Length: 359
Image (cartoon, helix red, strand yellow):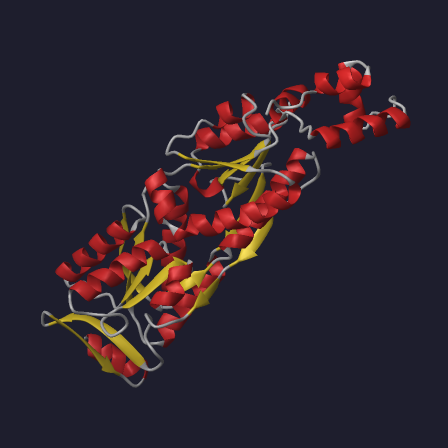
C-alpha cells in the first residue's frame, strides 16, 4: 500500500500541508480544534512521520554512534565490547536513540559528526591518538556531542567515563605477594596503544610496591593468539617468573590454552592474572581484575545524552577490584617455574623458606 503523506492528510482536511505539519508538532499557533482533527485523521489513516525528512528539518539524525577504533575482527571476538555495547544500548533505547556501530582502526570522527550521520558519538578515550583527541575537542567546541570511555592521554574538557585501574591491580599484587610470589612477568597490549602502556605501568608499579620483581614486560597485541604466543615463548625460555600478569582477559585465555597444550596448568606451575573480568573469566576460573564494563557503557551514554541536550557534565570515575578464582596460588603456596628444565611446585612455610627455594 502507498504510504500516507502529509499532503494526503491536508487534501482530506482541506488545509495547507504546512498546517498539518505544524499541528502534528503541537504548534500552539494552530488551534486546538485543528490539532485534534489532524491527529485523529493521522491515526485513522496510519500516517507515520518520515524520519529522514524530519532529521533534515531539525538538523538531527535521531541516532547516536559508537565508534570503536579497532578492527571488526578484534571487536567481535572480544567479550569486552559486547558488555560495553549492552550498557550503552540499555540507556540509548530508554532515551530514544538507536545506535550506529562502526569498528575501524582509522575512524573518521569528523565525517560522522559534520555530515550529521549521528547526533553524537561514544568512542574509546584510552585508545585515542593525540591527533584524534584534538579533532574531537575541536568538534565538541563547535557544538558536537562526544563522550569518551576510558581516560585519554591528557586532561580534556570532553565528557569522560573511566575506571581507576589501580585499586584492583594493587589488590592482585598484594594477594600474589601474600601467596609467596617473588617474580612476575607483565604481558601487555600494543606498544602504540596508550591504554596498554598505562596498564603495563600500573602492573609494574603495583608489583614492585609489593616486593615482586618484574623480570620483563612483553608488549604486542591484545588478542587470544598474542597471549598464547607470549605464554609459549615464556615456557620455551624457562622464565623464572611464578606469576604472569596480563593486560586483558583475552590474552590470559590464550596463556591458559598454551599451558594446557604443554601439559601444565595454572596455578600449579604459574599464577595467571587477567584484566577486565569478561563473562568467560568466571566460567574458566580466571583470576582477574574486574572493571564494571557494562556500567562504563551506561554512564557514557548518559553523558552523551546530556551533551546532546547541552546539559552540564562531569567526569565519572568507576573503581576496579581483584577477583581471585582458580588461577592464582592458594595461601601458603608458591608456584615456581623451570627448575632443572621441569615445572614443579612446592608448598612453603613463609617467606624465609620461599627465598631458599628460589636460591
